[in-house]
Image 1 (cartoon, rainbow, N blue to C red):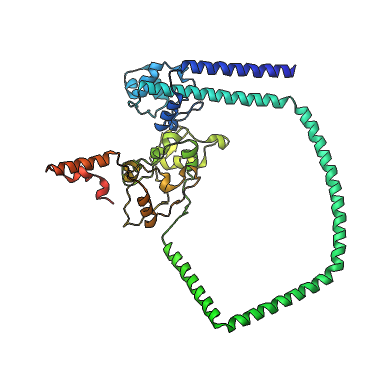
Image 2 (image 1 turned 30 degrees about the vertical axis):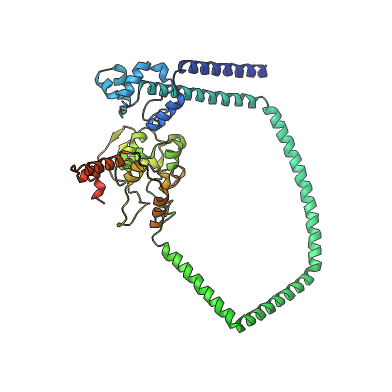
Length: 428
């Protein structure tokens, strides 16, 4: 009876999952879940939202059932406008989640429908995982008694074999001890003879080597060349800090944030695409997520010690959710550092050239603790400039072409027309 009920239970779960899949496909046949996933990632929605878990924003599971599609589209286009208009649902969300969601007027109605389709697809995936886990548990429960019997029988067999092996090994060891005792004198005599022979050969080789002046001169010259090469390499690497990995005041894991949670680099390092420096994010950027994300699941219900350091820096009370006035900066240790005479502009490389962060910083999404991946030497930069093709399909080069055309016509051209208003032109 237990087996029959187990089979019927698994069959019912499979049928329910099939109905859910059919419902999801029917409701989202006009939407593209793959495009919705890409939009969800590109707009950093995962920083505040998840399917099946509440983060800074509400849990997206069951979104299509809780809210009308038209209301969702209006909310994503202008959430603050809906709050200001007095929409009751919008006002309730604002009171429950104080961090106001940004307006995404750039998304079309179809784009938002694609994101809704992606959320539904994630719900189906979560349901399939739960069903598979339940089915696996049902299959494992029926044969527990048989598994116990087999385990006991196996332990008995292993114990018997262990006793037999110990007895046989004891006899072999005793036989070997007898043989070694009888041959020990012969072995010691042979060893003494071999050592004497080796000493004689070494002495003869040393005498012959010292008599050959050309060979001695060649050996001295080779030693000098070897020391010169070693000294040159040592001096060449002065100031090169490849692999430098200092201890930071907070153990921030790029593997968890950029790898597992797939948070875009520029969400935290916003200066990389618009200024010379990539900029270290302030603590309030961390608090966008960590005012609700405390990682308590891994610390027996307690707040993560590293997240507690952020709370201390911003003087935040997680129980009352209030900020105090006793704030203090987080003293991060700089890892990548160029000499003062070397000018490097992040925006020119990221925005104009379109270079990925990993080109210079390595596989940052896999680093538990960040270290200097590249040597950052002049040779390394020059080699990259020699190999990298210029991406002329951007507004920067269009601006230069337009300026040159005006010069040909004899028109006025100012420094501002060729990037003269950029901060990095003067402020190194």
